[in-house]
Image 1 (tube, rainbow, N blue to C red):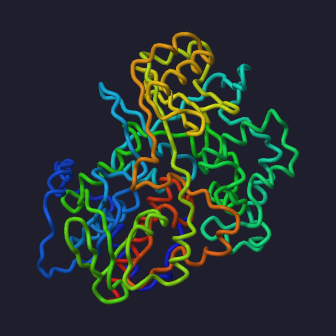
Image 2 (image 1 turned 180 degrees about the horizontal axis):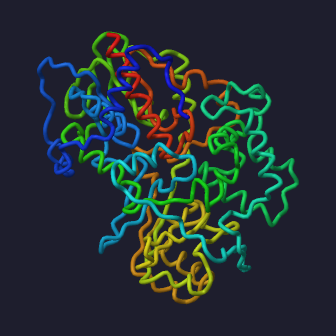
Image 3 (image 1 turned 60 degrees about the vertical axis):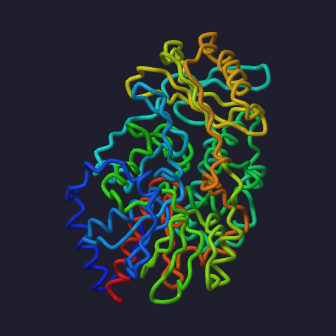
Length: 491
């Protein structure tokens, strides 16, 4: 369960309000997403109005917090989003004919109850990631088909060791582990090197860790990785497998639909193309936010953006030393690149293949069947290594279709469409996942969550469990809404 602040009467009152109204149907469903261009053209009023709350960031955390405030009865708030869309690190690519392919975060799994509950409330369906059949493993000119039974083929004896070690590493506060000093000295790669990993098992570990952290095993801190496993009920397979794991369930309509439906409910409470450049007087009763659409004043501010992205905001006065050091040290070097190849049908399934590819020393980190629930068309998504594939669309498409043809046959040479999304070119998404390096948590962990004056830190990175995942973002949104309701009640 997500950790809550120390209870008091005002917090209990806020929680009762949220629970009472959580099932209510908001009478704003027909507003649609007309907020984009309209709000971008309107500057804020220059009057002396002071809002109760401003939320920075219209990803899952920020929109969840805003939705909770609305359901608690609050009307005095705004959500400010720098992009021209909502959804943060979730993004749907429109393939056409009513089909989409996710180019950002897309999966949920066992134990991720916060995002499951949100999906039910928003009437968004789910379905299982397709895993039936054999996975193709490729190395050089070699190719083989293996039934990995919905996993990455990692050594279970080693995986069980990681699960056991994770029991002593709290998911929400890894720096509080009794073994924190010892474990935080090592990277996952250094630890794996001591386990005598078989050569045939190494590609599975490389793919698994690249998927989870966006970096090589040598850049992922062991303490951080164990805290992630702890989130998954202290079970490695629930974190870094495919079937029945954190990569096991998809959303009908794509993951961004959660954010677009929340934004529809919030209507003109969401302001797009409105980056916050400076935050002043965060240590006083009223905070001033300077944005591209003019100044905004509020009593409380929820900062629901990536910690490293906070470095692009000027704070006056400067933030406390510990918090500023955390933001400066937070890694921002793992932007993902994700492609979608579209076919008329998922032809690989009739060959007993599941559309998954694991590749050694090639441009594909992992490819999978990303077709819609009914398999009406065939879609292959893949995480791509920038170092091994040029950014030119035509070269990328030709290279990948040739690889797919080696994996599944000549039918792969005739795709209907191709889309390559490189997150490096999104200035508001400087990293997709947070691969926390060795030594980080024991140095900076204590500064992660405590508010600074009237600033409340949110976003998936602050979640007590499933930090870095969509579920963590939803939990962080709920938590920050309760925090500001409590603070406003005391004030």
